Image 1 (cartoon, rainbow, N blue to C red):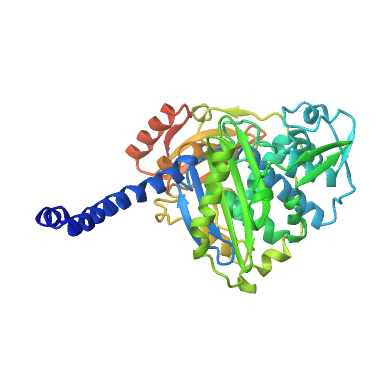
Image 2: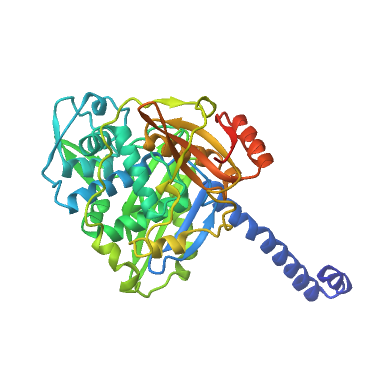
Length: 443
């Protein structure tokens, strides 16, 4: 329309100039808007920005897509450690022993020697600044006996906090195909660690750490140049790309952001700064009501109990175990927490809308994905399969069913609520993902 007006005004120079200028401005603006958004999105694979005062999500882009956490894992490692410290079972001066397993971790690390010790306060700062993988393994083994045990402890803690899509297998974030999280879950964890353990959270502001004569600089560059940043952690592996969880406070406003999958550290940091800048005006300056997180400030009365000493798990393919009367045991990982638990406000606000689950434990058909002599191994199998096939299994309840074979108690790992045809087609799809399974009628 404007072009036609400009054509009619061709012999009036001043009108012609004004019209053409207007056309160019409109066209230029139309192009710039999507380009700005595309540029921000292209820097990272997933992102979320949360108003820490209200728990409202201000921005979300693929926030529920499963990705490797890399060294963001260490935030959970420290969360579990802080629980032991608050309960008085561990202090800053406690000396943790270094095992050959811990000393043998891949870089980045401090270079700890087998048989030596490291104080808890040094291990904490090593995780925050250097992101030392050997120090992370030291924490895991001293608290839970073995790193796999600690991984199970981390995963259960994640479920208790409302991190429904996160599974941990190690304390450091070193590559593991089964160690997965989402931007949303990492935001939940960040909110919890600063609210549940405020007296320890300030360590994430540490810019430099000196250990045995060497000085280490924090990898979080926002601490050095982005106003108001008070933490918290970076991460990188080839599989994950460049990750960052950050917290920024200015006056009464407080934003928490997570970006995952940056192609470079610089682009990751630029994306985080841009997202904070774009959404700062939306942030609330009102402090959260005391009732919304006072329970979180009190924290859990006791730290999580370590799993029993690990033993070599006995595993059987889903089809290898004969049918037998079962006792159904819901898996804690997929149950809702107690309504009075500390993280309810965070969980409710940050959780995406999900459809009401179909079926139930009494569905006519189940999909079995394994059988184990350890309930924790069965639960871990369910968690891993659910992570690998989230959409395929959405709305189907996960559970373990026990039975005796001789003098040994076994635990079947199953998903419920299928028709016969749905169970068979779901199992076929799982097998295409190289996940062993069998469709069977509910006993």
